[in-house]
Image (tube, rainbow, N blue to C red):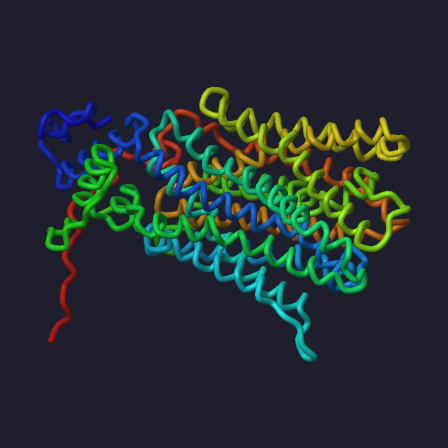
Length: 548
């Protein structure tokens, strides 16, 4: 371990070759000394700033993704002549567009963040998200234009921005965090997803209450005021994104990227001193740039690194675990209104008609989503926050997948009995809340954290993007499955079978977790499976100019 002693850098390993310093040995010491400072730093205002700036993005992500869960019911009233639900393919389109956009954004921004830098890309994804969200609120219809198709296009664009936020926020928070608080810092960032889901339900509830008298007196075949409501609900998702944009654009580059990818140890050491003492950073345009020889991201190096089973198995483990988890997480999260209605929870009385029935249905959908968030989703995140750095990532993920397997088996195979009577329906809702709790006190959180820790800096964002994109592929599979199974043997029968399918994927997640290492209290460099002694070979050799 390298440490600072006054103005000198020393290392516990001693000097090389009996006291002779090899070329680049001092630079290698300087790198390890800077990393040691980052890894051992106490929690500071700068760490809090990173957590808030990254967290607001995830708050916005979740709001924008899960608001459609309620908005799709509103769209059904407006564009399906008061039916209260979109046609199957329309509902599939508006719900699957964002996960497909996520998949594209995660792969694209994950690669770009490793290619050009975290700072240069951070904020661009938020701009795309804001534009895509605002575009939905202005969607219109004409003879040659279908409004649902327009919304689908805008939700795809919004999804690209949201997808870019995953690898960027993960690697930025992990690369700035101290080793002993890294798990809690990353969990606190990701936990804003729960607050975003809750905010979407609360905002929807407030909007429905504000428009109550208008809805009741609307023409039940048109519902012009519900048309205003869904636009307002989705459009308000721009607000936190706009607030966070300035801070995203002004966050510094991580010292790990500056050292290991830009290969500028001098600037990285200066950055570490600045943000640990004052929480700021400064790049001197006139300062000399001291490039070094270090492993460089190339196609050959990428395949050489992941060609080793010890590294490839981790990428397989992070990718498949996220895939299995998101099949259930998005299968439930984007369809909770359908499931609540299928079991009769909050379904309007059959005697109600017209606008009063629409109002009651929308209110019950909002209340149901608030209950699910408060009773399961949010507590699950913060249970993980309390234990992530002491218990560890792998035990939490294993426990989560195992418990979810049991819960989905109970809800799936016992579905008919659980919906037979009102008391049994309450038991179903309780089990449903437990699944939300153990998704977040389990693999939903850890699948985000582990890929941000276990790969080397030059591939960390790319590998996180691959893992996250695998998850969103699972979300797409879940949505298509819901759409195709929805009307088999009646509107309610499919729910039990869906739960049984979820149980199978949760079981497979147990086995993929076994491929992963435990990452708690270990430095990012240790987790990379690369030797850090002599990581820097020496100053970069100057490029020779071609002959005249």
